[in-house]
Image (cartoon, rainbow, N blue to C red; front, top):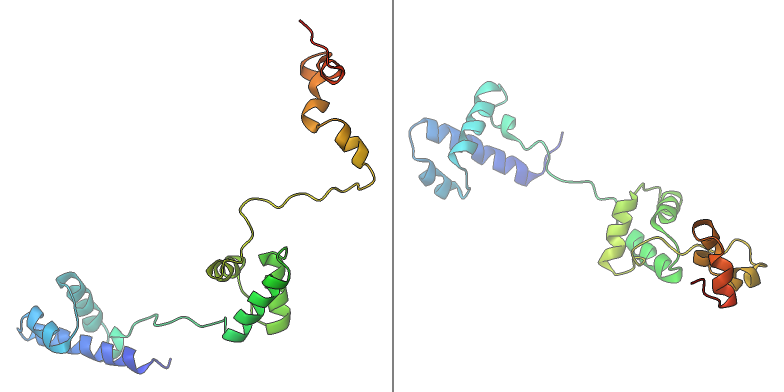
Length: 168
């Protein structure tokens, strides 16, 4: 595995630190001279790692030194323009479009993170339901849904309220 130069330099400094502290030099003096900060607990872990391997300083290479970047400026620009053009499009649909257009698989959470950075997210909560039956608008306005089933719990309650009567 090819490591960045900074990671290699750090591993070599850590190896030198371990060797010099084992030779009897003070930890604080060696850290100050090398320009690194290592605690006693970290030093014991470094010693165990360095002493158990035959690789020398390569045993002290960081196992994880960076993340692959998936989102470039072109993809980000496209995402923002797409969301500004259609505010109703949601992250799952955007993830599918990005996969088809850029061949990059992004998670829905990361897309939402990118949209939050530019304040392009939808308001919290579920989107409003679209009325499936558009022809029955008169029926839905006649009685609200909360009064529709009032007769189940209060016999005659629904009719009495509609007619304006009170059952006392």
